[in-house]
Amino acid sequence: MTASELNNMGFEIERSVNSIGVRNLIWEKIGFVEGNGTTTETNHYTFINNSLSQGVYQYRLKQIDFDGTFEYSQVVEAEIFIADEFILNQNHPNPFNPSTTISWQLPLGSWLTLKVYDLMGREVVTLLNEYKPAGSYEIEFNASHLSSGVYFYTLKTDNNISTRKLLILR
Image (tube, one colour):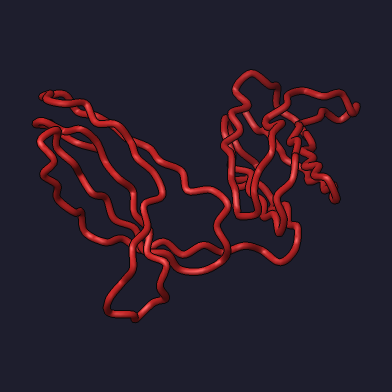
């Protein structure tokens, strides 16, 4: 996020390929996000670094102006944990009103669907139907359109299926 910008061409995203504790980090460019030139508006930027292995990574931004000058951000670290087994966690809070969080871990990338069913087994909503790389995930489920009661959520992947119970209390 920037509060304002002056002559901002954009941001190179760089990642260190070294381990923790190495003094002279080696950086590689992994992406670029276009800036907004000169503006007094607040701007939000996003870059997603997919397909990472488990480990600790260091990142920094190289903010580049149109005249070629640049400045580096502070280095930030991100630890990536990849589960060694498929896990669908119990939603929390449970019971809930009106929203809850559903989380899971994937040891391998997979196409997945996350659906909610009523007590009669009728599909109420599909929360997710897409490919996800290995990693830990969570999604917020807003059930304000549903009646109080017991429901089930099921996560299906290429190799696994798991179901848990959730309770909506109004």
